[in-house]
Amino acid sequence: MAWQKLENLLPKSIKKAGVDSQVGVAVICDDFIKVLSDVFDERVTKKVKPMYIKNKTLTIAVMNSVLAQEIKLHEPEILKKMNKHGEEKIIERLRFLV
Image 1 (cartoon, rainbow, N blue to C red):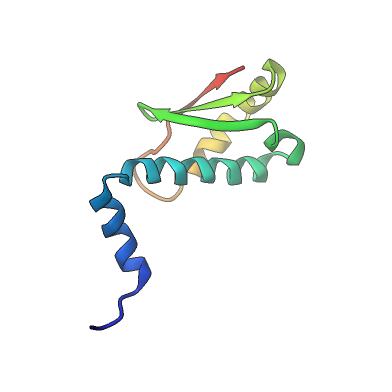
Image 2: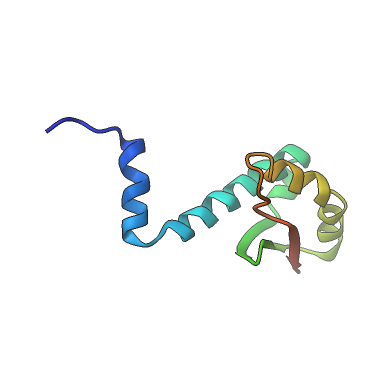
């Protein structure tokens, strides 16, 4: 039996297990944290947690309304960076839980 690359096996296994959408959401949430750390410093990223995605809206939990407003001001920049990989918009808006 020939060796196969893990990068070829993993997507098939994820799809077969039926968790492909959950893995996709986890990747998007991880990307959000990376983009947020590019835009803000560490004190902000420690106080923000992406929760879930529904209807192309990423819901994030924030520590207070001031922080939510600060992120909201940078929303166009954040969304542009998050959606840069493809033609289709993955996330169209941010929603905040305070």
